[in-house]
Structures are given as C-alpha cells and as structure tokens.
Amino acid sequence: MVTLKVLTADDWREWRELRLLALTEAPEAFGSTLAEWQGEHDTEQRWRDRLTDVRLNLHAVNGREVLGQVSAYVTDDPGVVELISMYVRPEARGTGAGAALIEGVCEWARSIDARAVTLGVRGTNAPAIARYERSGFVVDANGCRTDCDMSMVRFLTAV
Image (cartoon, rainbow, N blue to C red; front, side, top):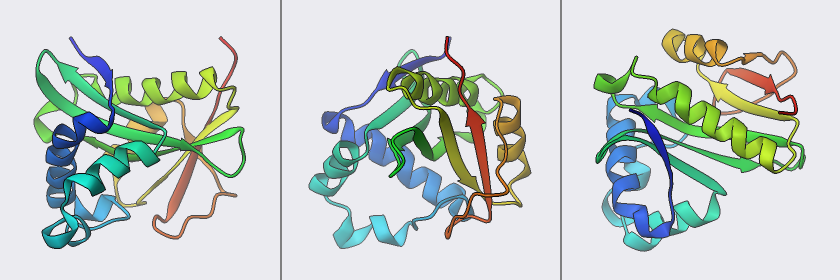
C-alpha cells in the first residue's frame, strides 16, 4: 500500500539518495543536473536547506521502501502552486506511487487555498505527460518555462 510521508530537513539522507538516482536515471527530466549536486556541492547542509527552502516535500512509501518523491512551492501568484522534482523509481512505476504523489501536492495546494497546480515537463517525456493527464492536468498554452518545453496545469475545485 502506497502512503505519503511529509519530509523535514532531518530526512535529507533519504531525499538525497532518491534525488541522485533520479538525476542519474533521467537527467533530461529535470532542471538541475547531477553535477550540480555532487562533489563539493554534495553537503548535508545543502540537502537540509533544499528540504527547508521548498515548502512541500513528499515521499511515496510502501512500508520502509521509498518509491518516489515530489516537491511543491507557492509561486509569485499565491493562488498557484508549482509541482517540481517528481520522480518514481522505475520498478515502482504503475504501482500508484505517481498518482499518490500528485494527489498529495493537490491536497496540500487546496489546503492553502490555491486555485491551480502547474508543472513543467519535457515534451518528449510521453509517460510523464500521460501520468499528469490521468491526474487531471492539461497543457497550458500560456505557461512559459525556461527549463522545460511544456507547461501543464490542473485547476483545483473545492472539496
């Protein structure tokens, strides 16, 4: 059973492990690179700061196994949340982990009265685009991102 865990700075080791795997396994999917997080940049304080500076960080877990992760923050428009750093381990894809992570972000966004969740994705990443579409996202023709070539949005309704 997939559950979500809200991370704090004390969870930096677990976040680091999966983030480095994500940047290794799917470098084209992210705005940052593996090199930016290795070597002299790979410090406990930097990982702690990352988990502190970004408002929401989640892991999808099954028991003690971490299946995936995602982050989100409020944009300059307080009614819009940006979903970032989404990654699910290859062996955990199709287990519901991705859907759970997305719903976790959307639930958090609703709890802070956001009206929409946005994200950027590479137009060539068909599996990710399909996952986001299944979760209610649509292409946002007005979205403009520098690190991804496609913007998507999900408008939230009150629950």
